[in-house]
Amino acid sequence: MENNLAEIKLERWLTEAPHVGIIGVYGMGGVGKTTLLKKVYNTYTVSQVFDYVIWVTVSQFSILELQSRIAFAINLDLANCPSDVDMRKMKLSAYLKTKKFFMVLDDMWRTLNLRELGVEFSNPRGSKIVFSTRNRNLIQEMRAEESIKIQPLSKEEGWELFCKVCFKDGHVQKDLKHVARKVADECQGLPLAINVIASTMIGNIDINEWRLASNQMKTVDANFPNIHPRIDQDLYQRLRWSYDSLRNTDLKNCFLFCAIYPEDSAFKSDYLVQMWIAEGLVKSKDAEYLLETGYKYAKLLRDRGLLQFHTRGWNKTHDVIRDMAIYIGENEENCIFRAGQMLQNFPHIPDDCRRISIFLNNITSLPTLRASNLVTLILHSNENLEKIPEDFFFNLPSLRILDICQTGLKSLPISLWQLTKLEFLALSGTEIEDVSEGIGNLSHLQFLRMGHCRKLKSLPSRIGELKNLKYLSLLDCDNLQVIPNEITMLSNCKIDPDWILEGLLQ
Image 1 (cartoon, helix red, strand yellow):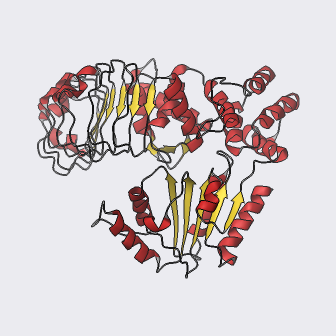
Image 2 (tube, rainbow, N blue to C red):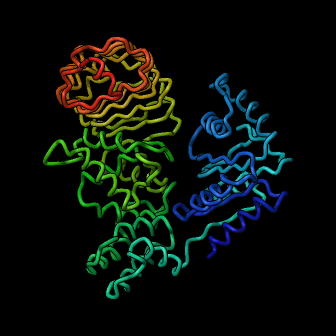
Image 3 (tube, helix red, strand yellow):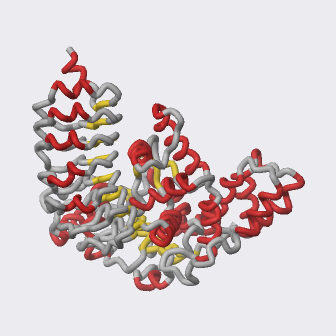
């Protein structure tokens, strides 16, 4: 009820209060701040009240990245000033001053200087900014004229939502009702916890398992700190139970892969499943059904609320769920997950590290790594990384997954072709012009992604030796001129686009 009133109040401020320009929405993680803002945002996306309705997830992104997101939302071209923050600020400011806009700044962790961003806010046209945060102090620091605290659901509201998610038609079996209510109450009125726990218990009619869930949810992880910078302890314990109840270790590790991506980013199901297979996390008696099994894993994680459906073929992860995955991965599974943290230097890596993701950072050089257990390395979207040392991969003998997409690489180091255990190699969006004949050494390679390599001119003839290759992407390789006949030897490989192989077989 209170959150319905919050929605009504927010809509009234947006439409009937010209003196209110900046509104803050605050509350603990998982309480429903983003859900509220999405409902209001979607309402005004299809209305004629504002010239532009803009959604920006702030999180830990840089001013440059936020400017790009705003410019994209309002169709403003900033191509002539790709890295000049001040020039971009002036262009955004000049344009937005002429418009009436509604801007949502979701998931703010620190004060954001709107003027530096290019959002001048004298507000003569009735524009509105609504931001969400877990930090109540930001309400004053951002000079919000009005604010709303999102409260947890009442016990009755929480129980109603739990039943709606968990039980068909909301009908609870009589002998389960008491213990199911106890499980629902353990979620403490937090919609995220309710959705995840209720999804986990769907179809379960064993009263003993319900009792076990009720008891275990209280203290699943005794080692979790009393104060964590991003996750509330009580919420973590409830969500952790859902993770612990996954049926096997491989499925748990599949879930932890969501932490390789930056916060609020969408990721493709097929890309994710291919990496799961490459790491050996997807098991099937018949190798032909590995992909199908991987997609079933993804569906199971979505059904439990640990992954979220974004659009067809794409997934997302709630920021709190992602924070949990990062915590578990780094504290229990020898992972380093530092995606989207604006790092300029490569983080320290312990010798026993198994997975590293520095996706979407500002890394320009790589150190010498000695990590004999490392199986996954994600360097995706470090655009200023233009060179990898020639000997970089010699000390990474266990590597099975390498993603260097959207980097500034113009060539590939010799040591790459010694990674005989490599099963997934992603080079998309790099500046490479050719690929060494050494690729024939990668006898275990199953997935090779080279789409959008617009300077790629030729493929090596030894590509035909990759007998285990199941997928090859060459989409939008506009300058590709030399395609060897040996590519027709990849009899079990799906090649995108199809015409590449068709042209050679004619």
